[in-house]
Image (cartoon, rainbow, N blue to C red; front, side, top):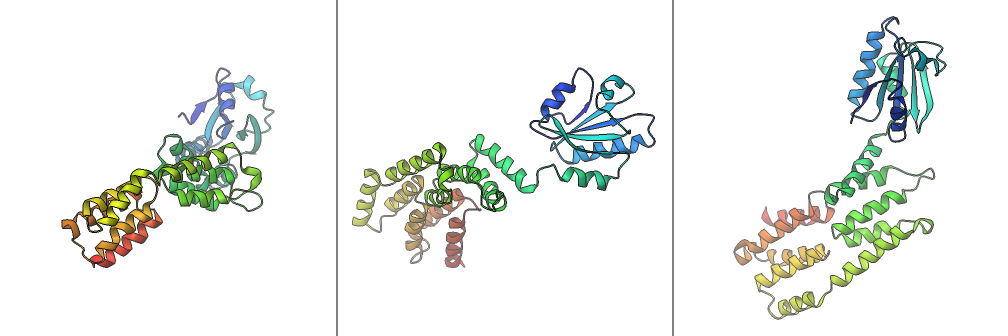
Length: 287
């Protein structure tokens, strides 16, 4: 993504169009202005430091005099910040880096908004495990003008939780969405949960459970059932199934039960609170 432009009559409309997706700072300067090199260097450094959070559009008022005259400038240098195709604020005359940074701060996304944007991108790429912690933090931090958690973030969060088979968490997330925001996306996510819950109690699972009930010390059945429970979004049952025999014998099944439990914990990820709970319980046995 190009973040610094030299403005001409040929590209100005394209640059203004970009302000509908990212703020654009138009910088009107002249080589005849005192210390214009310092101002230009400062703006360039700030633009690069913000990694594409805004675009710097430099307009040389000597080379593009006709174009510059259309902006009704009263001083050079002047800067106008454009959003959605329109100037929303600006400043005149040379400014320090601190002053310009404070000016930009009013319009650039904060850390939580950046995490939300990254989470949205990861969801679009089906990278749900990476998106989940970012969306959780954004959901907890970003509130609407009434101070309530935003439903749009909750829907994205629930989508991730469903994709990762964290069905109880998804139901809790969806329960926070007020009636007026329960749209078709909300209904679709609820339908997904219902289908997954039906699959979570399939005849195959019931058969495995019945076989294990008859032969409770069968390690192969135990591991197979735990794996199936994990796949259908019942991770706590899976972990408990493996943890209970480990409390009696850490090396049961020649260490296969312990290995299977560690594999399940790794699959849940380090940020998962359920994984943290059972990892702590397992370490208590180990040490």
